[in-house]
Length: 309
Image (cartoon, rainbow, N blue to C red; front, top):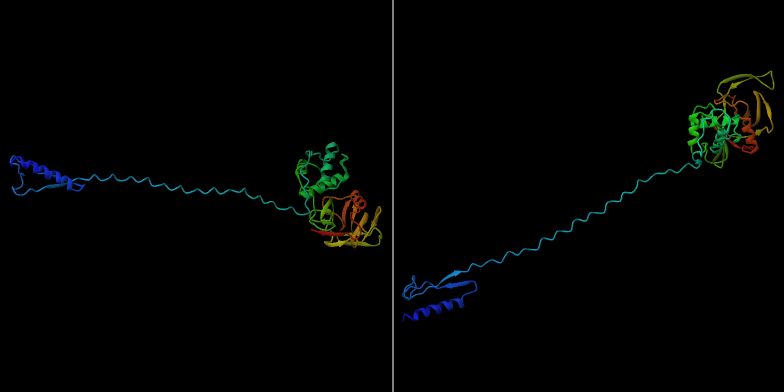
């Protein structure tokens, strides 16, 4: 009997291991010397079941959250070069550029430097007798016209300021008219322009009516007294008659190769063409300039004459 009890206990222990779930283990109660459980009576054996602590599966480490692709930085806006606004030149403006060689302040002296002045004036559209190096009447008239055009004191001498402007001015002189063929007389600037097909060909110094009332003996009839206001009329006119050769005796004095455009008012040559209005109403040019206009047929009969201020 004493030998059978331990065998029974072992059998129970063995069944307990085979019949339990994978998550529980049956622990047999302690055996006393009499072979009976210490906590049970002789007729009952109770198995104490202890839950096996299940080691939780390690928390699955999720793969790191995929970092979203960085927001695509938009390509930087291409900064366009600032648009350079280039205004179209008026149709009557011609660019001739700066002088190829600096203009010297020759004053009123003749010489090689004066020939350079004369050439530059022709390039800029101010007529003179040509680059002969002599500082004569037509050169002084052209310098005076250039000074008037630029708004400089018009003394007809090439000082340093005039020389610098002459070196660096890039446009050929032009009238206001940008269409047609005509003679334009600008009383405000005291300049005369020859315009052909909208392009200014030549610019001349001129002297128009002084605006001063006058009283003078008629040169053709000493018994008459001529009175009036020395005004050059403004408006659009046409040449109606002309005197082709030499000097002619007008009622108020001699005039050279005149081209009349309203009554007794004419464009004509004169030995004195100052830098201010000084005539009785006619439009004065130098005699050499008047010869040039005749020789080049720049002012034939019926040419439009526009006088304005």
